[in-house]
Length: 148
Image (cartoon, rainbow, N blue to C red; front, side):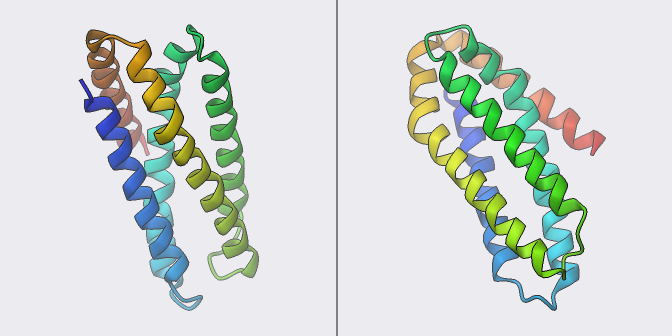
């Protein structure tokens, strides 16, 4: 039953690891930053797309609608910040400042999902619904990664 939530948590752990790797890199390690950021960017967008087409629409149809709406807004804010970052060079001092803001946004979102949204979803949805969402999440995420 928990495949969906295990996948989400595993993605979150990977994002946190990449955020740390990038923050800890020196300003002279532009190639490392670029490579790590490109992976983070691709993976986060694929993860978001999968959530936006599986878990969040399901939440919008329940008494947890406000949670789903807030999560969607957090995704939009993170995408906007990534678009700003994409316009800068990794050695620009504004790049790392914006990246730190992105990290804070994403980590706040992860905390909300893991402490509030996932437990609520486990209450709201049947094992069969979660299995279905798990398959759809995996398919959408995989497709988004292939397109990236």
